[in-house]
Length: 193
Image (cartoon, rainbow, N blue to C red; front, side):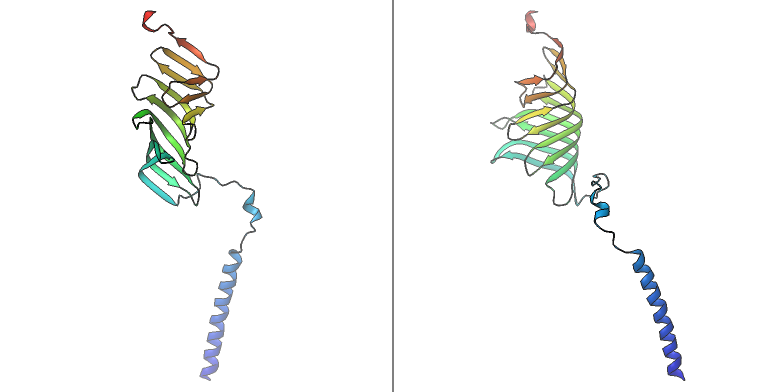
């Protein structure tokens, strides 16, 4: 009978489909969350939610411009208020809005929630007149204090000489620089020596 043949054909097709579905679902079982909860997120393995090429961000404090962050590329991940920058340049301003100093680094982190900034990898900060430079591998700019600080090796060059240290704190105009364990040669008498 033709109906029996159709039922057998449907029955065989349904059985094959059912077996394929079961086998597919068996391979897709969800892993318990506890399997991954102890593994820290690897930022290198993350995929950025937003990517900005030719990035610029004003650094302000209560509406007063403190500086301008410029980067070749910035990546933002998830709901985080952290931007990872490459090819970072930051112009820091005086209260009157003139460029006070310039920071460059290969990489950086901009925290839009606090306004603080972190620079790493070949960091150089130089005064607006380029007479003083600071070289280090890592530093942090604290927006609230308008100061830079770091705990890595630092070299400060200026008209009076070169000084090395194991860390530092400095204002953005390089009027006040505190070095940890300073060593080097400084001409304290200036041109009279």
